Amino acid sequence: MVGSVEIICIGNELLIGKIADTNAQWLAKRVTALGMRVRRITVVGDDVDEISTVTREVLSRKPRFILTTGGLGPTFDDRTLEGIAKALNRKLETNSEALRMIEDKYRRYVAEGRIEKFEMTSYRVKMARLPEGAEPLSNPVGTAPGVKIEQDESIIISLPGVPQEMKAIFEDSVAALIKEASGNMVFYEASIQVTGLPESEVAPIIDQVMHDNPYVYIKSHPKMAEKTSYLELHFSTTSDNMDMAKQRVGRAIIQISEIIRGKGGRIKPINP
Amino acid sequence: MVGSVEIICIGNELLIGKIADTNAQWLAKRVTALGMRVRRITVVGDDVDEISTVTREVLSRKPRFILTTGGLGPTFDDRTLEGIAKALNRKLETNSEALRMIEDKYRRYVAEGRIEKFEMTSYRVKMARLPEGAEPLSNPVGTAPGVKIEQDESIIISLPGVPQEMKAIFEDSVAALIKEASGNMVFYEASIQVTGLPESEVAPIIDQVMHDNPYVYIKSHPKMAEKTSYLELHFSTTSDNMDMAKQRVGRAIIQISEIIRGKGGRIKPINP
Image (cartoon, rainbow over all chains, first blue to last red; front, top):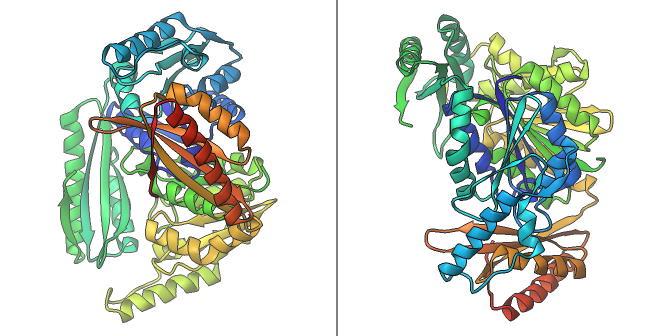
């Protein structure tokens, strides 16, 4: 889909459930706030063929941006760029700008006394082996640069898996590109808590209110707490005008609240 | 891949980053502990065509199990079974066993005084509309049953998105199937913390120790804390014998610890 974003998260640790995919959540939230729509998130392991296959599949859906996380480091199983190069039929080559970024980083580590000395071993040079035609993105936090590659109608951005590094490169080098591509759209959301009515009774009310408020998307989430259960209703909209977005969501919340109270339900706002 | 598992998580809330995909993590961890390998996790929105497309794509890779979460409830955007039915070219039909499960649940809610009375509205019957040939799986916590469908070499299991319901149905009706399909394999993992050596110096050591311990997989994760950074090394193996699995991981940890200490690094165990 032209104009959408796909996220690919790479790492065996995600497939064995060692960690939750908080990188995907963070990126999805930021992309949405910047006015673009995330269409799909895919998680694969540290395997060149899997990475290459999923990259080709995602490219065939023609998203404007493909964001990848993980697999840029110095170890044997950091294979993201190898997989992407394979998907694009490009060679990996030592990128001189990336190499300079990495050398500068180790030089600074020595200056700060964090390491005694350094050599550009093959493991360190590996982080500068980018697909032909790629552009390195400076990593203000860690060692491995991010990578930007244009391919057909898509821009592929590869970010490290370490959350602090991923976020820093995204904010420095990616957010503005997405904002511009979205045409400066904004996303607005709000939630309310409903008690006293089961989800199956709220379902037809949501249908009605979404029909009357065509720009607002409403989704119900049943929640269970220790001794009580409730329904969270989430309202969202995308607009080129934040005031308009807030008005639309506000109007839908007022209407649904009146109907739910009329049927004996109780409403509480949920602070974000 | 015959013998593997794929997970499909369905929900717009995941694509806007409203929540982290903790269901995927929980399922990945349980499947891994039961001795099977998760090959891929895919997240899509509440869209029949997307759900249908991804179901077909996943089926073409022939995993033994396909686990889906989300989209089984009574609201308009709970469309998982519609998407799967479309992918399989099956019709949706009212499943009498599922209908009985749902009626029993509302009858109990009335008996417990949680609701005054109930009618089997179209929104409630919707939760019993399963693809032809599907088998409902009893939901001990909530209303919507899980669903089991056999298709070609795969078993598709659809679970609700509410974590408590998803977990309860998995433990009651799915875990034993996966355990049996794995041939009763077990997964064992352990981690250590390394300080005083950068990841790029540990990388060649990992290569050596993995070469000497062919059944053990080692992955390094750079971690940043407030004032310090360290490297977490994660060791894992799968075996038909838990003692053997522990021995293999233990041996790799002893070898790597000796080499890292010899190069001036420090080691600390990480308790799970």
